[in-house]
Length: 371
Length: 131
Image 1 (spheres, one colour):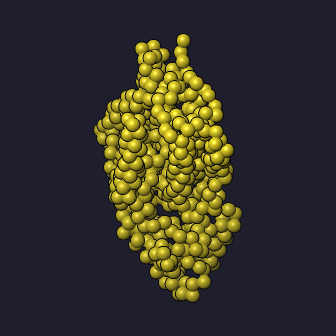
Image 2 (cartoon, each protein chain N blue to C red):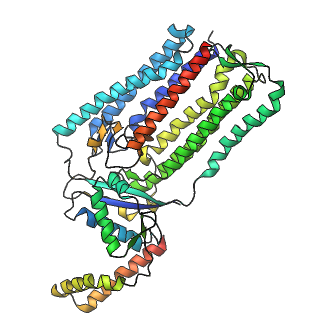
Image 3 (cartoon, rainbow over the protein chains, first blue to last red):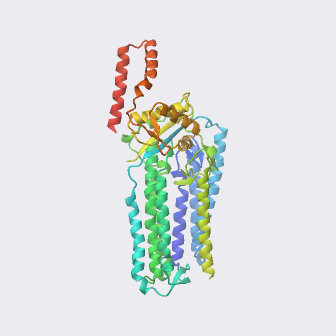
């Protein structure tokens, strides 16, 4: 009744929806819907729960649509994440401004006071390089297998497949065409490696509302570094499978799409518990009292705020603009991971570069498709 | 394990921010968190994260440099200097004098002051050895 791409689209939408719905539960405890607050107000619980329910209901609706009305439009699943992201961002904004208003009305924070705990990388004993090895092995497999199969690869190869699993674009056999997924794999692996190194070197502002904030931030940073090194394992597996299909070694037929995207789906599913259990800056980590550091036992002085209000650097609570800060990568406020500092010229250039490269790839692909 | 320098800035405190920074960096060195040859973060990184002006960071750094606790390395980053600073005793003398004056004026006996000094030094040594 359903073909593979329908089932895949259904699962994909649900996974993305769950990821988006848990965001308020993984942020810093003192950053609620992008607003810097003292944690523990009852309204925060309500906000998180209502956001979760709204996003999950939308997800269920979209998933249901995919198996009914949009059944014939198999590629609908490509749009469903954008719809979900857009919708959840609207709910985010509603709560962001609502909490900002309450904060202003009730004078929760005095804009001049507060405490800041910074944790600065002084020296790294060792970069967790070993986690990069599995991804590189899979990448190497693509090229070794390609070299072995090269003579038997047909003179015309299918380089693009439709959602129905049938090829809709062909190229003449050449090193460039045969290894194109492998080359993209090299690019992604190198990019993830550089990002991982960059993140392992970033100093952070810890969430001083939590005990052991500095330890949490350090564990969080290490875990993100390792995660970035492991992502190529899944991406390269997809490239390996698509290469084997392109070379006519495997013939998944109508199951093409599901076989190709299974590794990435596994990654997405595995990332949910990882994100939930770690939390932004390690906010959800369970830390034993054994390794408590002395410097970190934040104290509230004369009832004045314990946390420095930094709302002025965050546009709508999601875009960081601070020219006094020379970091390029900073931890996100709503979500888990990092974002760019748009107050820094270097990150604006980097951001434009990434957009430009994406646009160029898109134009090239489109041009080829027309040909 | 990576080594990280933790700095807490209290914007509610009466104590000037450069002084808070100065004391905590000095503490990190005496507690063994920072050691000889370690680089301090660039002042703009420090300033951005701690939400203070980078001139304030430079103020703390230049005072640490005057005390001989840190030096400017060839790459223009500040570095924890070696303990072989000949002028260190000379530099700390005025502070010691001021402290002893104050303690005696407050009626603290010389003997108790000496004991208290030893106690603090012992506690710090235990801390840096314990980690």
